[in-house]
Image 1: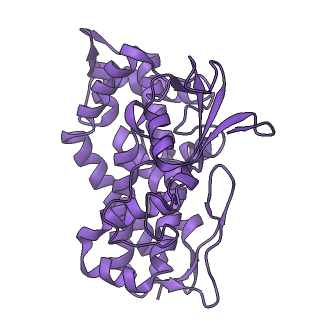
Image 2: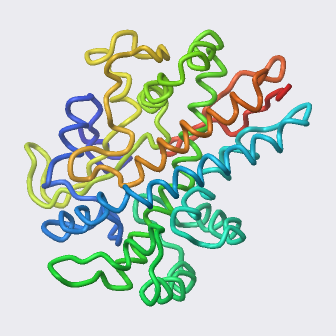
Length: 334
């Protein structure tokens, strides 16, 4: 249906949202330089570059960086009587993980974290200082590449030619954005769902292999991004060319025709779907980063803080329309 106040065609059912996100006639907006915005053959070529470099040494470096940072942050909470998981864990872990993966100095994490809060995001937002920040590191990696993700982008070739500095900066920015607010919000909702269901938390603690399913179920029930916008480049059914399409991920994830008891959080749900990071050609390149952050972050918290629980009387309340998650998660670490 068309919503005049929102100025967009609304798509809310699971099957329709999934189809819209994968439809080549519906493209991302606003214009940007991330994988989400690269169209046609260029999009496919760049995506073919990014997929392989997220394996091997780059993946090992990312995994080690996530695990190490998660344990450092968890140990900082261990001696506290009360703490806020959002401010002291969720908001810092994803940014630090991506900074580590790209081989950037750890001391720049705070600066990158602030950029993620003021314009840099996984949908193509771009901070004006990002290129000037990345430029000297790109030059150094081109001269002396290492085994980090930024080196992999600098040494990658498309159609026999290396990626331009702008393309490298754009792809690095999309990964930094993917490791920023969206992943932090997703991690906050993930921890909130598990702490709010202590029985399921005990099961995940005893069976760590369930963590991946628990994360996918949290993305279904409480995605960090509830609305994704697309622009029609040609007519799609009743939707005219040039129109804006709003894919309602939050609604799709609770479609009762697709999911039994959709409001219930259930780590044993066999098919939680896959919409929170996009679908089809617009599948978010940061999905791997987000999953590693969630799984290793949870593992660190459960290992270092085995008695982690809510502050008495607290229940998480998600806030926000487009981006949505609990603003605070006050806990007793011990």
